[in-house]
Image (cartoon, rainbow, N blue to C red; front, side):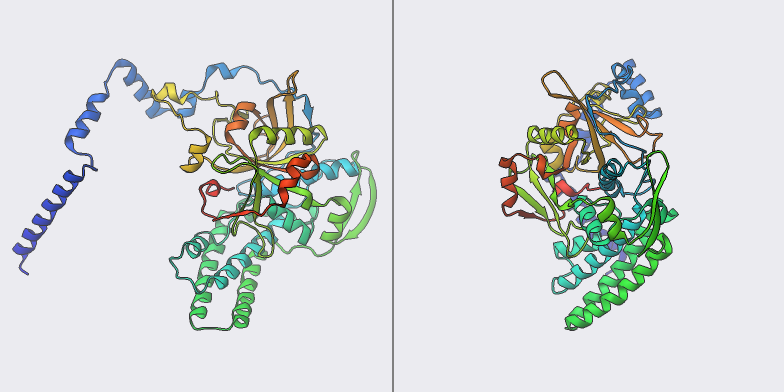
Length: 466
């Protein structure tokens, strides 16, 4: 075809596309754009707002001055804590939170000083187990096409440093725990992004190799043997980044005043049994998910840390029931694993979570009016960070006014490492709570025996999982 004819055909095609777009009415045409321009008036007020918003932090401009009074830090009920942990630049909040719940019990039980478990130790096995979970899932789904939704999700999420409480439960039960000084943090454990990226690259490569073997009808024994070879590579990468996990160690126990009590040799499992000694399987995950039916149990496929472990399974409850469970636990000096959408209305200067902290509606002249259900359904909100719920301030009618959270962002953040949230914020942005089932009334405990409804891992409620 000659060049002139090509231009003629392109011109006709462009004209046809323009007519189709005009007929469909889906694009921004000149008339529509003019209406938008006419709707905005360059008044002195708008000019001032434009200058301010364009040049300053939006949160500074939307900050509600009424919220700048001194914070009320009194709590009628509070679980004692010793020392604030710091997850640094990592997504291990789930691990810090879970171990902080166990730590508080251990410190109280054994009269210890500022004691911490090694997060790096369990993180090592978390990453190894997640690598195995991915590779085994690839083997299990090898007959499905690459564009299958589950296979696609697996390759999008081969590994990560995020997680949830069932991971803590499965990991400590299988691998035990060790004191922080036995396996301290490394640069890679404190700054996980690069290691996680490299592990993800390698696992995707390995996943493709396993799928290729599957297309050749390779026997399952050969696939499993190949997976073991691959995991040896992952193990080496983890050792180089995090160190070698101890199988045995000697540790001296001291009391709260620093006085030595005894020196013994432990394995990680024997240390867990002696110093924690609790049946973590008694803890139940509770959720407030208004997109689904209450008093039902739901489970998320592949949302677990170990292949033979437990998926994220939760009992969906109204907020009133959740608050009653939280209050009962705190009154009995038991902290709770808690997760929420922490970035919403968080004042980073004073460590408060309050719906009135920022007035975005007045600043932009438009309401932001989605409710909790709508925010979940549209991926606007979800569980993004885990912390330890440790205090509640009750009024004369035993109703909560505000809540106290022990965070894992270091002692210099917020209220000396703690965050304070209003009860209204709790309603809107709290999602998960893990509670010892002994604090659950029999009516709720009876619901735990029902068969769970299986949900896909790409469900909106879990898209923002920490």
